[in-house]
Structures are given as C-alpha cells and as structure tokens.
Image (spheres, rainbow, N blue to C red):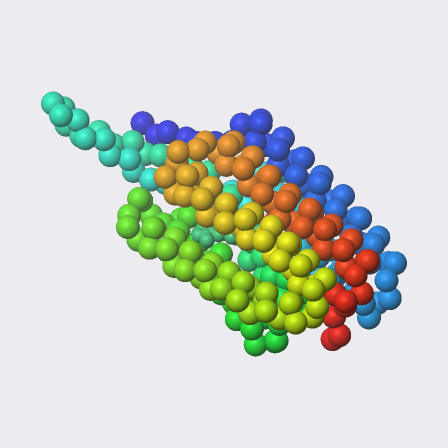
Length: 251
Ligand code: RET
C-alpha cells in the first residue's frame, strides 16, 4: 500500500502568506530604487530581483505548481514475519531549487559588492553556490535512501564551505579595508547571513533527507528562513546603504 506525504491547508496557507510578503517587499524595494539615481541602483536592482524571483517561486508553489513526488521504497524487517515494503511518495517542491539557483548567487553578489571583492572572487563564490544548490537538487531526488543521496548532500555541503570561506576570509578582510563602518556592517549582515544559511542544510537533513519532519513543518521552516534571508536581509542592506555612502559601489 502506498503512503503519501502531502502538504495540508496549513502548508498551503503558509506558502500564500510568504508569496504576499515577497510581493510587498518587491514593491517597497522598487519604490526605494526610484529615490536614487540610476547609476547608484546596483544594490537596489540585485535585491529587488531576489524578492521578485522569490515571489514567482512562492506563487508557483502556493498554486500547486513546481511540486513533484519523490518515491522511496521503505523496507521493514520483521523478526518472525517476511519483510514488508511500503511505497512512500513525498512531495518535493523543486520550485525552491529554481528559486535558490537564481537568488542565492544574487544574495552573495550583494555581500561581495559590499565587501568590495574582485571579479574573480565574486565569480568563484557564485559558482560554488550554484554547485551547492544543483547538487542539493540531486540529493533531493536521489533514488531511494542510498548512500549516493548523502554523497550529493556532502558535495553540496563542501561547496557551501567554499562559499563561506570566500566571504569570511577574503570578504571580511576587504570590507575592513573600506573602513571600520563598512567592516562592522559587513560583519553584522554577513554573520546574520551565515547563521540563517547554515540552518537550510539542517532543515533539509531532517525534512527531505531523513523525513523526520512532515511536509507542512518543512514548508513553515523554509518560510521563516526565506523571509529572513530575503526581505529582512534586503531591507537591512538597502536602508543601511542609504545612510552609509561608504558602501557605494563604483561600477
Ligand atoms: C541544501 C541541501 C544540500 C546541502 C546544502 C544546502 C544549502 C542550502 C542553502 C540555501 C539557502 C537558501 C536561501 C534562500 C533564500 O531565500 C541545498 C539545502 C548546504 C544554503 C538563502
């Protein structure tokens, strides 16, 4: 007998709420960009695109698109009876991975610009991040609960460490070089990012990886993280940038 793990009304309402938050953030960030000359809008453009992409992916997920079933055969060994197997179908929102592939490199671009990193380091950081998301997608759809699935997960975690390495080592040094004000702001918003981002692979391991969390709980966990990582991060960055001319980017 097959078993289905689906979102309920609670999960679906959560998706609609986050869609609304992302849409409002898109409007606010767009309006904020109108108050600065076009040549000084780089952070605004990057940050607004992040919440627009998130709005689209949340709209897809809330309206029932961008979802697929991951099929796993769960085998139970019984002592005095023959083994039983269950066909388990769990919803996987692949729209998230499309969102993350586009938005996480842009979030990193914001931080790299703030630190004043060189083009080469920016590209390496963004590519390592894309490798992290794509290998995470392979892990999510890894057939069965094979070691292979956790192999992809390990590769994704390794790529994540490369991202962290670039920002913590090079990013912090470069930001400090721009003066104490920029250095302290980079340390604060970078530290916030590091904490939030590190929770994603933990949730993934508990929810998608080992299915110790139901689909609703997974949706709610990612919802909280996504709101912190995108609209809250973006508002903090744009409002600080407004009052701190030292953060200006010459491009
Ligand atoms: C996965 C699973 C594989 C291992 C790792 C992951 C990391 C994901 C991260 C996602 C960040 C998303 C953000 C979204 C914004 O709304 C793919 C979950 C390391 C760090 C910031």
